[in-house]
Amino acid sequence: MWYVLYCPNQKEEELLQACRRHLTKEALEDAFVLTYDRMRRYGGTWHTERQLLFPHYLFLESRNEKQLMEELKGYSNVISVFENDGKLVKVEPEEEKLLRTFCGECHHSRMSRGYIRDGQTIVTEGPLQGRENLIRKIDRHKRIARVGMPSMGRFREIQVGLEIVSKS
Image: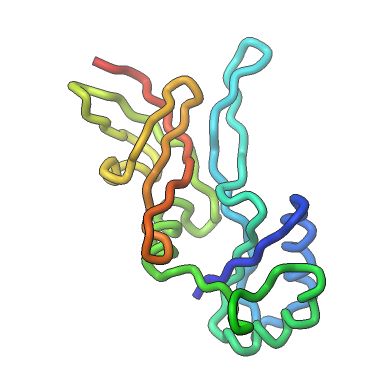
């Protein structure tokens, strides 16, 4: 099961290292941030950059919610660990499954590539391949796609890299 922590002041990396150092293996299986590739043009050429998929959020993977909650209580003055009633914020199973398909074991979504033919987007490589129905909007100039995903009973959008190489 995945849980999410809010990290104010862009200190995701510091909090990630602190969780890995101070939490026991019984409480924490993995701590990570989700990232994606996007293209940016500067200096006259295109460059691939790694961006945070969810800025200000750290993900924790654990099979023992109670143990994790107990160990995190010592850090409650530093981070926003708890939602209502002292419970950890869980990532919905459907949302977790979709994020796992986009980001894989390395927790990183690489750049997708495809083309548009007769108004239909066809993705030929990358995590969006076969999931074209999730694409809500494509910004060809910035080489990104807004992808719809279920989140806590509503629909939210995330941004992932998508390069459209041709359009007809």
